[in-house]
Structures are given as structure tokens and as C-alpha cells.
Length: 323
Image (cartoon, rainbow, N blue to C red; front, side):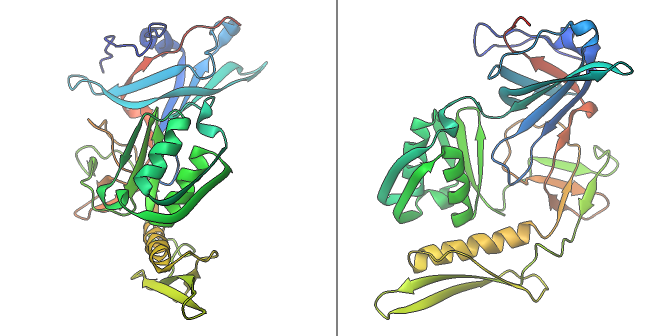
């Protein structure tokens, strides 16, 4: 395998530590899981004699994988979140560095107090994101124009609000660096990664059926002032079970109740099965769940994580910090 030393720093204080870290790198894992608000990366390093310089919290990290002769692809960009030192007299010293796809030290986790009247999802995301340091918002066209009669944040962070809004409208919320994404849950996006038995599929761990997450029907209710009665919107999931899921909270009107029911139906369909697989490097960013695996002739959409040991990494590093 081949490691490229060519890099472009985002900030002048960044340095390329690929060649320096490889001799002491014990493990590297990049995780990209559907249903979580950001990616993560874990590096385990041999810290014999305490020789490793600790990275600063919030320091920028970039990781790229690739096969010899095919070039490298960046699979993770983020910031250092946690550095843990461990060891004992028998096994020596180790450092575990955890990085997140967003800056966990920034205003993205600060609570906000604001409200909107008759605002679209795009307006809400952009205005709340501006305070949180989000410079770009990428929203599926089918979700941008969805509106809320009234929407508020009560000391709620941008992350908390994004996850809540995604649950209400059937979206997947994610933050990568200073960009926030809202993709449509279970949308028919083109697979970013196709793993095929006999070609690039090395291993898989898939559960095609999970009973507890499945519901045959979902329901949401709203109060109709004109008739002074509770109304209900229900959707079929197409799953062959008898249980019915009812949304715990009532919605403001029929439109929001319908959006909640559609969201719950998509969630039940998505969570009816799960899995993960080490995937080959990809050229572009992917929407959650856009891996496809073909063990024989069947292609099944899956959630996935991306263990790094299948590929040669390039690590673009953090500024140094003395112990």
C-alpha cells in the first residue's frame, strides 16, 4: 500500500504527521453511522516512554484512505474531542484520541432562545446555524419548503434542535465541520458505496430483521379547534407485524401530524434491520445509509461503519502542545 505525503492545510499551524505516526499507530477507526449527528474517528497510539505530544482539544484532524495505485480519499474531517491515556506495568502506555466531525468546543452546543412564525425548515436551520458557527446548510429539496406555524428553541442547542426537527419531518441530521446536512430519511439516493462479494467486500455483520423496532402502523394526533375534537393521522409501514406506534406528543395541526406520521413510518422501516461493513474509500460525501452490499445477487441497503485497517491512511494533524 502507498501513503501520500501531499497535503493542504486548512490553517497554517496544521502539519502532516502521517509518516511520523504510522510506526506507533496501533489502531484507527472511522465511524459513520446513520442516526447520529456527526462522524467520529478513534486513533490508538503506542505511547512508550510518554513520547507522544498531546493534541489540543478542538485541533483539526483530516484522515484519508486509499489503495496503492488508486489514490487517497478523505473519509473524515473533524476536531479532537478527547484524549485518554491508559496503561499498566504489563502492557505499557497507550493514547486513545477521539475526534468528532464537528467542533465540540464551539458554540454549536450552546443553548439558544429564539422563535419563528410561519417559517420554513431552511430558514430555521440557517438562522439557528449562523449563531452556532454553521456557515453552510445543505437540505434535501423535498424538505426545504416544509413550514412550521410556530417553532421555538428554549435554551436548546443547534444540535438538539436539529435532531428534534429531523425526527418531526423524517430527516437525517448531520454536522460535518461547519456544514449542517438534512437528508430525507429512506430517500432513494444513489449508493455512494457498493460492496460486492468477490470484488471489494471483505466482511459484513448484518441483521436483516429486528423485531422490536418494527410497527405495522404509526399514528399522530392533533386537535381540531373547529370541531373541538382530537383528530388522528395514520400511516401504514408495510411491515408484517401487529404492533402500532402512537406518537407521544400531539402536533399543532393536520400538516404537522402527517409529517410526524411519515417520519415515524420511515424510522420503523429503517430500523427494521441494521448492519455494518468495512467499506472502500469513496470520492464524495454520502447521505446516511447509502451503502449497498451484495453478498451474492441480492443488494440490501445498510447502515455502516468504516474500520480503517483495510486501507492505507493519511493523517493531517493537529498543532503541537507540550505536556
